Image 1: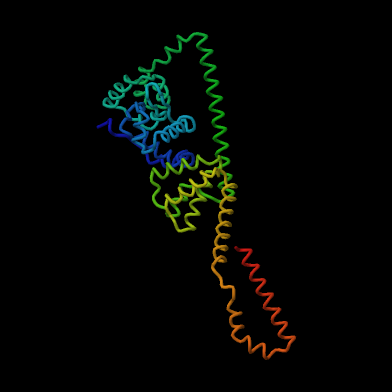
Image 2 (image 1 turned 180 degrees about the vertical axis):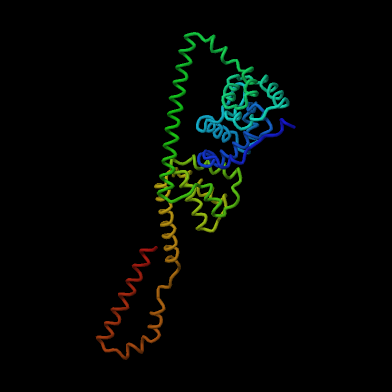
Length: 338
């Protein structure tokens, strides 16, 4: 029964990183990494991307993207592509505080099966229980390997570590740029993130597949415009009383099909589309079949003879001139809207 039990503290939901840095997808993936059937008591376990896809409900591509964030951005996980082993770095801090023979025997057995020994070192650094930490020391042979490293190896390793640090620093800078851009966009437009907007405006429960598709759309637009574009599409859906994710997707796909990947282009496109629709409506209304003789003229004809009889020559000439001008004006309007 011990191997099937995993402890998740309720304080996890109050953690600052969990609240501010994790996206909805990150939260779901983190719970999946902590509780899926492949987890062990050691915090190191084998899992393939296909299995991770199945347990999380995300696609294989999305699972890789989110896992990469946990490795390079959140620094909470390591993964060995060759051995297919995953290591949860702070596992020992929260899950290895209680000892006892059953627990220790289980840990010994599981550690003996670990292939990437560096993971044992990574976990060991966070363990507070002295008895359990000593077990990890038994299986941690990285110190012996370090003694056998040659000078050339040391130079190579040092260079690789420096290169890795530079890449991580560059990655952090890029992430910070994205974060600042997103924050500025949200501030300027007084917007919340698309996931919250979806739920707060009663589009429905944010199912994992909807959240996944929403993330794909956000990434399809230019950096800093994805959140606003998705929210804009939902606002259009609300205006048209079409609160469904399917309708929102049709709007987003239309923009992407027309290579509209920033908000300036989207606004210009929607403005032109509205103007075209108004023009079509105007032309449609003005192209209806018309009688060449308007109602007022018909009425005039009915009393034409009577009027002519009552008019002086000057009044009759002025009346005929007025009728001619009004008919000419009507014909000119028809030509313009034809």
